[in-house]
Image (cartoon, rainbow, N blue to C red; front, side, top):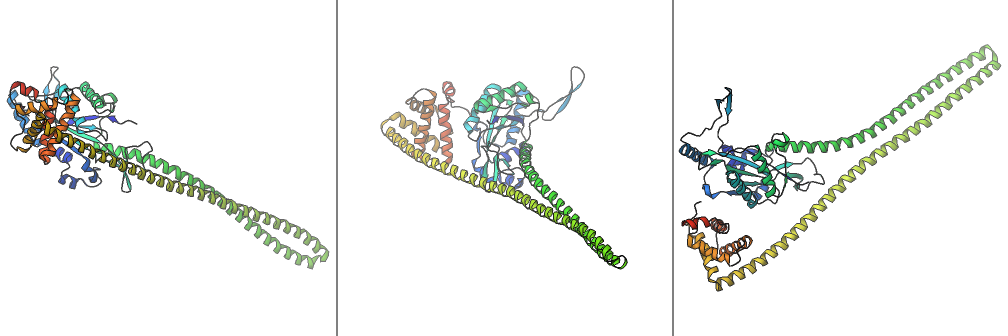
Length: 488
């Protein structure tokens, strides 16, 4: 089943947002192992992007800056708290306080990238004027399954001895203000539905239904995890109760057979007692008749009593045969019940083996694929390095562009290209073509050669990568036309 896109936006909790999104050490110590369902060993896969236009400041500082901006632009203090006012009809109306910083939680796929989310944020900025300040991709949250996942579940994977269902999502922190007017951006329900459609188109996901369409309220992360676990527990419990029902049926049949056997035992004991009592009566009668009526009468009575005793003893033999049959029925039922239990245990063992084998095969295939890709990438990097070396030796325009990138990255105080450097970089990009795809490929090539030649550290890589992308995306074009460097 295709995963559906969904976005939920609410006022940003400045006090806790950054700690949660950045996974600060203090936050990780305080959450506990079972409260938030974060797997620390998966946190290395998380990604983040901070908008350099706002500087490297905390959300509280940015909030205070917005308050000053609103005061300067409108002449009035920003209304932070909910208030009441009288409407035209005389009724009291509650007016919500301003939420200048808002946070959106967006469901994503496992292969969604920061570039995909930045394109979504750029479209939101063009359409509604809201600006993304921070983007965080979280791949370490989810919930533990009580057992093995369904066959259709392609996302869950095993960590140690337990199965984990990931909840891939992103947190986007927006500046919701128009800094030209000092007023907040106004988005209605139709705008939010359009935003959800935009997310599904850019992230190539099936569009989910908004709460306007379904009437359902958005579940917070912990409530969503609990709902998912509850449904999984219900499925496992249904299978368990079916197996227990089969065992109960077998036990009930055994109990019924044992009850029949006990009844036969009781009846046999009663018949035996009757036979003993009759034998005693016969002996007493025989003694009495011998004394009173002589041997003839005694013989007649003895013959009658003996026949009656034989009949009772015949009944006892029949009951003993019935008892033996009942014992055989009990043995058969117990064998059947044991076969059911044995088959169930065998099925569990076979399923576990098949699953382990499938996991190992997939892991081997993935490792082989990774090795092939590493070799291919290594060979491609070698070819690119050779081509770059050749161009550096033979082409002046290409060499100037690479040197300008290295100079910018190494100069601690220079944060942006000047107009001359931009021109030389664009001349080098035009060597490879003037369409967007060629320009992007050329930008990647220039950055790669500059990084190798300049031996950049991590800070220099980020700086060079950012400014080359700005040239490729045309962010410098308007600034060059105006005659000064681009403001960030």
